[in-house]
Image (cartoon, rainbow, N blue to C red; front, side):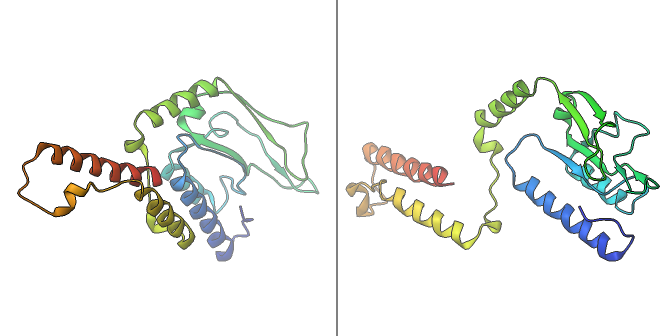
Amino acid sequence: MPTDYGTTESFVECADVCSKLSVLFDDSDATTLLVAGDFNCDVNSSFCDMFAQFCHDKQLVDSDYTRLTDVFTYCSDNGLRQSWIDHVVCSASLDNLIESMLDMTDIICCDHRPLSVTFGDVISQLSDDMHMLTSNPIQNARYDSSIASSIDINMYQRQLNHHLESVCLPRCLQRGNCCCTDEAHYTMLSDYYIGVITVYSECY
């Protein structure tokens, strides 16, 4: 994240980074999210409201704020300025699995002190989330073709054309007789329709 210099430029840069993170989250198929690091934001920062809104919009919990008090993660080289600008934010389901969080006072990395987070049974939680996702893929799938690049679209078209070649329209259905009452033809038409829909789903 950009440094807060109290200027319009730094505020705009922060908004830009938050919007990019937001897009990454929206495009992700992940059921739980976690972002940790230097947000360059504390309670006195002009970024504070934007950071809080970002967490609210993405339904993220600021896990360090809810567990630590009176700590600092940044200290200037001369030791005169200290602030709490490093954070751990994550989905509520992950936050519930946090067993401990520590401010590593004995470790200094450049001018920052790291935060340590210990999670509980994350694997079971991720397995449950994955089961929910795969048990109903149509309901949980999210596609947005408006953000696809021309390369992605061309690849999709090639894949679609290739797979559609394997779905053959029965010769008896090519006569175009709308008054046909042959039940066998109805079955063939249904199979053809299912084949086309299956190809579209697989190519996505």
